[in-house]
View 1: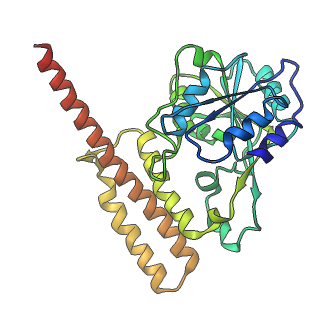
View 2: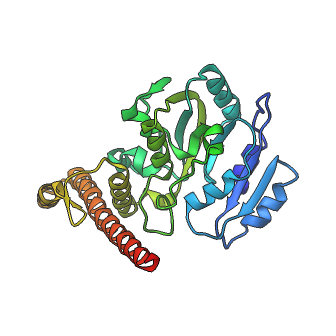
Length: 305
């Protein structure tokens, strides 16, 4: 965080000024001392949120926002010096758009191994596809607005909109896609998204994140998030019926790639299978949540009598 905050000291300020809000979500290291160190060097406000979860922390931070634009990022993201200026330009140039996403490029802690080319950089490392151009993001592509570089007009939050506390990082097991869920929810309500290619940040990719097993575990979290944010599908006991067909098919692909000593095909098949496993897990979780809610509703109804 110290390195990130040093980068913030080099930021060019938009003419409207800027303010930084940092939420400490249960850290046990030197986070608070570092924040105090920078309190006199940056327009910095910091607070603590004891409820575990990134979205709980984001919701707490929203109580401290000021101004007409709210920009989101992470504590391992290094912005280019004109980042805020470019986001301000995009928002001012396109007043009919509510959501803006900038570019997220990698900042490799160590040189990446050759097999990293097999990885989908979006869901794994939260990196922007190089093919996305400046312009409107259709409903199909609105999910390319990533949390490390996201702007939403503050009026949205003034109206009471908040992040879904059931999504996003909470320990090691959770459905991914905390910011994506909010973006897709707003788009379904008629809000429009814009890709601002000149607003660039670098997302740190740590050495341990370039291990195959770490990446593959990420597939399960990704699958959980996709299921929770996807349109409803036919299911039984919360399990999407298409998994009955797709999971055995992918399991066979994994076995064939292993038997034929094809490492790239094996890795990709395991990733696809883990996505399906994540959907299976989240389907069961959501069914349990629905059952618990129904039981609570019945209990409250009986108490009312």
